[in-house]
Image (cartoon, rainbow, N blue to C red; front, side, top):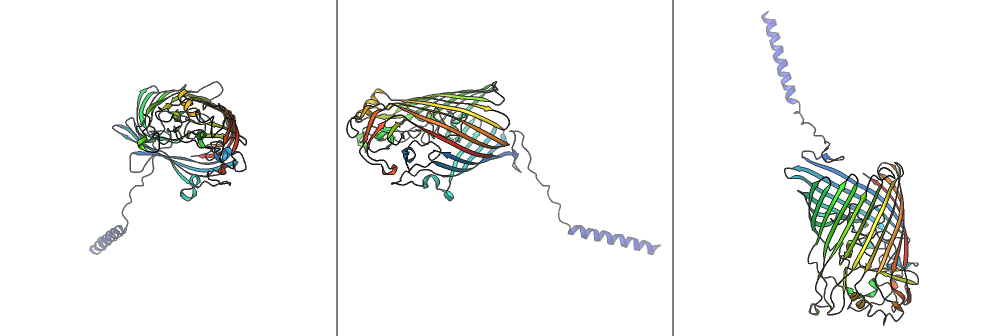
Amino acid sequence: MNLMKSLFLGSAAGLVAMTGAQAADLPLKAKAVEYVKVCSLYGAGFYYIPGTDTCLKLGGYMRADMGINTNSVFSGNTSGLGGARNRLSNDFTWRARANLNLDTRTATEYGVVRTYFDANYTWTSGGYGGAGGGATAYDSAVNGGVSNGQLGLNFAFIQFAGFTMGKAVSLFSTPWGAYPGNIYDGLVGGGGTTSQGVNQFAYTAEFGNGVSASVGVQDPSAYYQTGIFNLGAPITNTFGTANFGYGASAYGGTRAPDVVGQIRVDQAWGLFQVSAAAHNNNPAYYGATQDTRGPGDKWGWAGQVGLQIKNIPTGPGDTINVSGVYTKGASGYNFQELASPAAGATIYSGVNSVGYGFAPDSVYGASPGQLQLVQTWGVRGAFNHNWNAYWSSSVFGAYAAVSYTGAAKTAMCAGMTASPFGVGITTCNPDYNIGQVGANLRWTPVRNLTFTAEGLYTMLDQKYAGTAHFANNNTAAAKLAGDYALKDQNTWTVMLRAQRTW
């Protein structure tokens, strides 16, 4: 019995020792896997960044475009080689674009801290270089960059406690901006910057029931300085010269940011918005050097009203978007950055005729001429209709008018009816109107994949009459010196797009 007891205890001790040794050889217990969790606080698509209380949403799209009878960034054949309408004019513009956006939200004791980033990588071909010398040119500046493409920063801003700081949509813009129902980039009739943010510091107060008010300052230099013309500078007398050869661009340095405000009501029936902006015009000198002095600066302004109507009887999801704008000394708030003439000087040219439409912020003549603010007004709108779950369409249009003061016209026309243009100009009047009308059809066979076909017609109603004599050849556009009829111009554009959003 003692022997059996000793054997049993010895066997038990051995088993305990063996088990302990094997346990020591086992790896330590791994930490629990931290899975990505859905964040439902801010809507669909948000997830918690592992190990943080910050929610992140990734988005973007892939896009393929082809524009027919377009110039550069789908703004229409209205100037340069595109407007020449001869063998040097390209018939197509092609574009491929990849977009990425990141939206983060973090709840704090002061409210939600939000950051937003949106950027494109774009390849465009079929643009014009403008230095043809008798031949079409590939525009390396437009199409070049990283790996022969373009990197573009659309938005990068921080929002905290009602403040917005960085590159964001202008407070002046309506939510649809320059796209009430279209994909065409060059629609006139109101402030843009919905696809391109503007640097700003702004504050928004929410009053409940969809009512809000915002005020801020923003950078005018990128999108809102269409030009100041010094009419005392020598006239350039070559066909296709910007702004009809009037003087020279004479913007001084930026002295003040634009001051912008907005009041908005956004409810189930739709949206109503009123916005305004103050814009400083700071001219350069009368001559080429600072001792020639110059006119004093002046403040211009712009006002806009926007209206969106939802739940209309034509069908679920249908909307009407419309806006109207008036500017004085702030033309960029009517002719948005991609519109013609956004840069303040656009030529509509035909084979044997030419038309001019340009919208600077202001002009001034020789000393002691004072700054003359340019006035504009415009409207744009669209009706967007859903035929069924797969097909939708839009009908859209825009109109803008530009007028100059009597003093501005006197200074601008002083040299136009004499040499070097000759006496062929029977009416000298830089005022003009521009109208645009178009429609599109969209097919969405599966969710977030859409194919669009769109057509647009644009007409320039200019006020010049007679013929203009150009003394110098324009070899870049293959245009000869000679007499060209001053008349209204028109052009058309067709856009084709495939886009996958994610």
